[in-house]
Length: 294
Image (tube, rainbow, N blue to C red):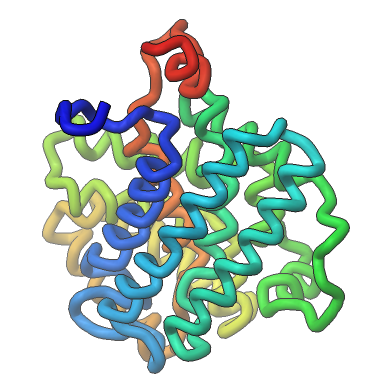
């Protein structure tokens, strides 16, 4: 009840939107991220900085809240998928108005939107990822015809999963790579920032990042993946050797104008899932727990 100081319900649209926005903001502030915008500068970009990313994230709050509301009110199925598509396109327009045409968070909006929609019916992160996969696989009859995005053109050219394929596969680079690395690094005593960098590098070392393929082709992707793997092989960003390799990789990516933006989007998705207060094992789903007054 209002005024009691009680924490918001796990399924509250406002609460889930807050977690999604927070994940985007925390990804933006993480440093040093190789090739990506962070507090040190614009990385491989010339049209973005951290203040712009933070502003963009906040502008998407209402979209995430609408997505969570739709998921609460509608059964998971084609109707919900089409409503999510409509809300996502509205959110994309809001983002572009806010950033004056700069695509700051389109990929993250897709990933986080699906996960926000799936969270209320899930009892843990894996269930949320599977629910998001089911939604992603459904058709959207109202998807406008027109020019394919950079990511879609890259997906067709190189035969890679892309953002859609990652979602339809239940976000394996989030659930199987980023979250385990994040938690292992924490358990080993590393600071939170180091743990998050370790998770990012784990994604970078394995992902067929369409942002990188768009800018640098297969050779650019090789540079990113091998460079990230080398940082991890040297002990990760929390060791002197690994940190030195990380800074070398950052210089290389900036010089080549290579931005692993897809990896950054998936890190934000991992931070979102990591922040949701899932019910205890064996408990009801988030939605059921709240409906029963828990």
